[in-house]
Image 1 (spheres, rainbow, N blue to C red):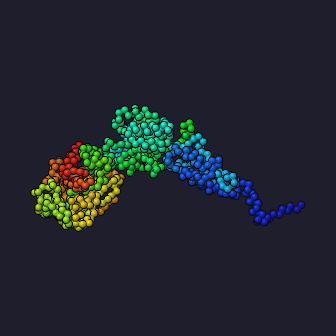
Image 2 (cartoon, rainbow, N blue to C red; image 1 turned 30 degrees about the vertical axis):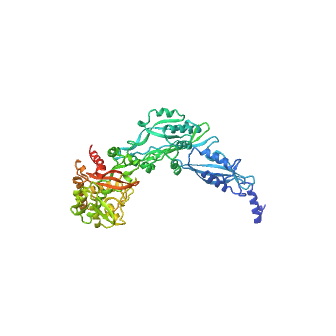
Image 3 (cartoon, one colour; image 1 turned 90 degrees about the vertical axis):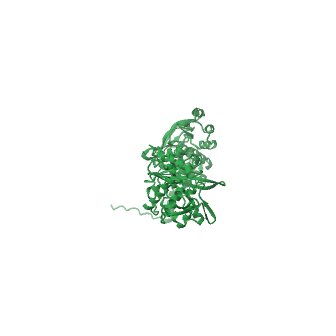
Amino acid sequence: MGTPRLPSLLVLPAALVALVLALAGCGGGGDSGPSPDPTAKALADGLSSGDLSKVAFVGSTPTIVQKQYAAAVSGLGAVKPTVTVSGVSKSSSTAATATLHWTWPLGSGWSYTTRVPMQTTQDGSGWRVPWRPALVEPTLQPAETLSATTVPATRGDILGPGGVGLVTDRPVVRFGVDRTKVGPAAALDSARRLAQLTGIDVASYVKQVKASGPQAFVQAIVYRQQDAPSGLVGRATAIKGVDALADQLPLGITKEFAAPILGSVGPVTADMIKQNPGVYRVGDLAGISGLEARYDEQLRGTPGVEVDAVGSDGKHRKLFATKPVDGTPLKLTMVPRLQMLAERILANVAPASAIVAIRPSTGAILAAANGPGNNGYNDATYGRFAPGSTFKTVDSLALAKKGVTPSTPVDCPTSVTVNGKVFTNDSFYPPSANGRITLATAIANSCNTAYINERTRLGSSDLVDAAATLGMGVDHDLGFPAYFGNVVPPASETEKAADMIGQGQILASPMTMATVMASVVAGHTVVPQLVTSVHPDPTSPTPLTSAQDAMLTTLLRGVVTGGTGIGLKDVPAPPVIAKTGTAEFDRNGKILTHAWMIAGHGDLAVCAFVDVGTTGAGTAGPLLEQFLRGAHVR
């Protein structure tokens, strides 16, 4: 028997092969008809933005589905997801499945995937999506909605030297509407009644409550435990859904303690939520002013979050959770005893006022107190005022660089005219110190005309250079609002004359003038520091020589032993050096006077300032003296 022959292979024409393959594709996941990809992309984009108007749905309209979607995710607050298409699988010419990847900016990031069945439209020209809750989250049931609850981190303290708590948790009573205890409509009425009872803005609080989730406690007002008005707890909790919660919140040592600088912690505002929807939610607490706001990210840490599916019966099913990471403390140089001493001294000063104390050896700001007349503004480190004759400290250094000594003769007439502008000494200037006197006598008695006459020794940039040597007029980022003053070359002789007496273009904050004195005491340029983690880039002003510093110390000691600062003469050792200052300014057509005094006492440099006073010696001097005496009492 021979070997059987194999059948010959049938060779088909190429056109016929193509036809056979096309027909085979019609029976499975073929590529005929429109692609589902654009519809999947439109769906992902619409879920990300909340606008589903470009998506066709099975048995519903985009408007209706959009409302259902919004209701399903309303408990997540203002955050929006990022939804992308991971892939699209087409099972037939009329059916496909899109895989969507979801990421919500909640906690460390909540991510998952959902599978979306798709089908063609009746005319076969496009694709439609059947709406169902599982499209939003794979386990979500028709009667459930998503809800997120913040799990707050422990806020970091603001600490002073030795780890003492400047701002730390202290007992409070928080009044607010608990949304878990009252329905949406009744919650607004309760909010209105609570706002009226506590005296806060009604419309704003009602708006807050309306925007909150069903699990939120929406704070209306908080009191230190000892400061809550008598009977308020009972009256407030009689309102449906209102709670008075015993709690602890980060607060200063006292209500007033460095408040304009430290700032406060409170409920986040609508603007904060809008700008940082993945960070803040309605009902969260955060730093809303001062250092608490600037360092909020560091202090607040990373809050945790729990996302639940909430059924119509109110039962919760946990879907996602992250643990909070506690905040990191912020360390300051501020000494509580000295800060509170300064605040007690200023407590009865009606105009705006400030006391700033610096340790010259380190630059540490020990106190930066603002008086009640500042109306919450931080004039101590950020105010801008003409420093008057305290600026003669800078003048004296500029003159020293030109070879002038304390015994150099200078002319102190009762008045001097510069380009038609008449300058005089103040009305308290002693007539016996007029005429030909020494520079030491001129600064001790604060002779304006002598220093104005001495301007001819100085070039246009000499005051700028001298100011920089004493830490004035050169900006640094200290990690808090700090103004270092304005010293620029004069545009005219009249301006130069005014600059010599700390007016004209010259501006300073109390911190600025405390820095000037600190530089004299230290014998080198001092850059102040409050936030210990912030180390400004060093500048390179012309160094202060030992001879120049000795001259300044001699001149400023003379102010105390026989001049306008004689009120400090009996302050216990070490010897005090000082300079007084007054500066005229116009307010509403009336000429008023700023009152200043700066002093050095051992390793302490202090500036006292009163916005409206008589003289530096008469108005600011007693405040500064009280501080010096109190600072050295243990």
